[in-house]
Length: 117
Image (cartoon, rainbow, N blue to C red; front, side, top):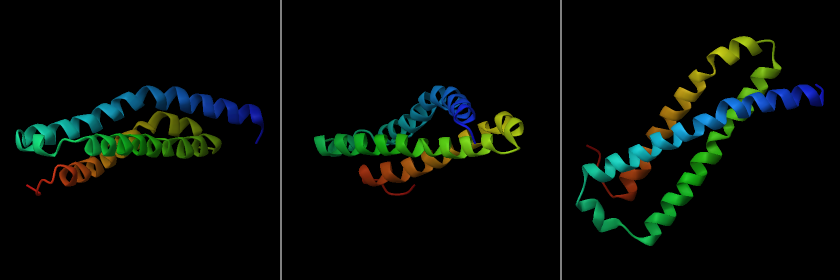
């Protein structure tokens, strides 16, 4: 593997994944806001600086986890399946975003101390 190829794969991965990071964060934010809204005004009782810091920490961790897509993407681009992968990597984005949304739901239910409905 030469440095030129690695740079091309990394550049392609950044061009693909970074614009989608915004959609990923919007989906996770929507999950939090939906659960906050569904339990309003009871959800106001748990608002605090500690909750805000916890949400911030989890948002950072969610974005670190998003970077795992780069490992998969660059590995797939280095394989003989590069062209097929580039056409179908949206599947990884969809599954990863759905997985993150489910995890977010469980954290939000615990943070706001909601029971499972």
